[in-house]
Length: 151
Image: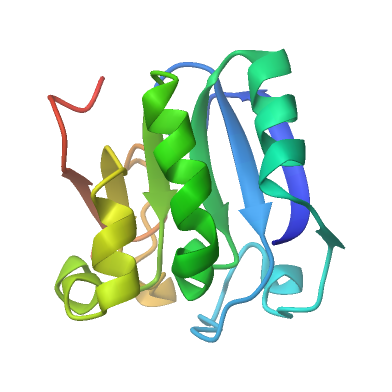
């Protein structure tokens, strides 16, 4: 998996302190994106599931998959998400796809079985709203897939 950055102890990518993993690659290329360097799928460094688990376990925070768009590598993320859920972690995932689009893609639908909360939809610059918690534009939805969501 290509990883651009890992930020431990962040509070901007979901409730509480979290370890956010920024995966490389995004074809949405939203105008006004705060992270356009994440668009290149060859960016960052290769990391294995074990390397990511080691970082997550060392930090001890719940986890957020972001990027880029992690759903472009849903098939690669599936084993990591399964292992994180077995270890009791709460997982948020940011994506430029809508939930309806995700359920229409088998690899994404399988990954979402292990995701607690999805923040869906592309960033739309004309709908930018800095007052919204955990998202950048008003079209984006926070969708709790498992148990109450934590905020």
